[in-house]
Amino acid sequence: MAVAPEARAWHELFAARTRAGAGDAIARILGYLGRPDLISFAGGFPDPATFPAERTAQAFRELAHAGDATAFQYAPTPGLAGTRDALASRLETLQGHRPAEGELLVTSGGIEALELVAKSFLERGDTAVVEGPTYLGAIMAFRGFEAEVVAVALDEDGLRVDELDALLAGGLRPKLLYTIPEFQNPAGVTLLLERRHALVELARRYGFLIVEDVAYRELSFDGSALPSLWSLAPDAVVQTGTTSKTFFPGVRLGWAVGPQEVVAQLTAAKQNTDQCAGALGQRLFEIYARRGWLDEQLERSRALYARRAERTLAALERTMPEGVTWTRPAGGFFTWVTLPVDADELAVRAVEQHGVAVVPGTPFYPDGRGGTNLRVSYSLVPEELIDVGIERLASLL
Ligand SMILES: Cc1ncc(COP(=O)(O)O)c(C=O)c1O
Image (cartoon, rainbow, N blue to C red; front, top):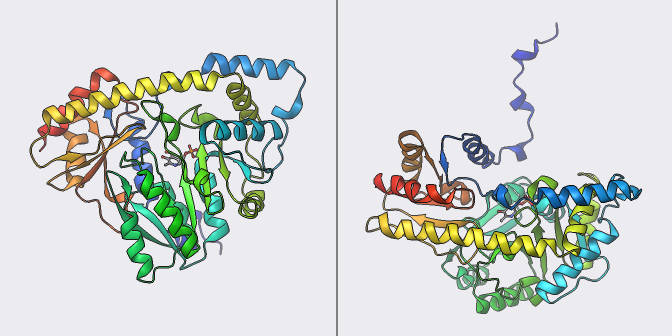
């Protein structure tokens, strides 16, 4: 007799690689975002005030009226030629290095670029080094291919490259190292120039790939930028990027740029994930970038997030008791708070008693650390609610 559907235990059939774990935490964060009654410092989302609705509508109308089918058709797997050219020109302008033909792939968001890197490089038991703490989407991508994820500490100046050096000298042999050099998620810190040079030197000496995630790079508060790792070492780095924080996440667009052989492998891996990034988003982005609209939007976005950061840091300064510390971001969406008490418990009380959502630190580590940390994201909190939100958090300490 057939088994009734409700009696089936589907999880018994799930692949081992799906038991990576961090997924629940992301789901919880997304859950908080759906509740309008909360003051939410939880999600790393861009503010809808930055979304270019009118100009996107104009670009779409132009595409529709031009009789050009490319925006509506399947795209080549590496991306539309015009979009790749626009992206390459941006990289050249902003990072001083232009990818050659075959070195740039258009992806469906930054997360897909990481997934493609993981799929192309990692086998069960391989080692992937990350920063501790790091973006949990990356931990999930690497664990999804059953890699051992090892966290190396960071401080106010980014990844502790000296600690990595010691681990490598002690025999650690990672296939890849994942870093977010600017305005890191979740810690908000930026990798020092000297450490960039030292990291590149280690990658060349030990033969691992650096995966450089530049998700927040263009959102420095003062418009300045250090050399990207990819521009310093295009032979040893794959850079993954996203337009989610600078254009809008609804198009799901990003890129991977790196050595031609690596990009060819990522492109092959993409053929049986989604085959191509959505052509419509690619064309909209191309128009938006070429007309200088993206740069205009970036200026407004930087000013908006700078104001929010300033207000958040001032509120922390004013309200937090002795023993609480936090990082001072020069761009991006996050500050990383260290408490003298358990952060999980505080985060639960903050939501339940005060309607304030923050994310406790443990999901940002692959190894259970982060128990006294909170990620505070100011990107989506209305300015007038920042003070009261931080005051309520402080009142719990
Ligand atoms: C560091 C980092 N990388 C990548 C991503 C993913 O971006 P996308 O929306 O392009 O998938 C995010 C999004 O939060 C992020 O914080």
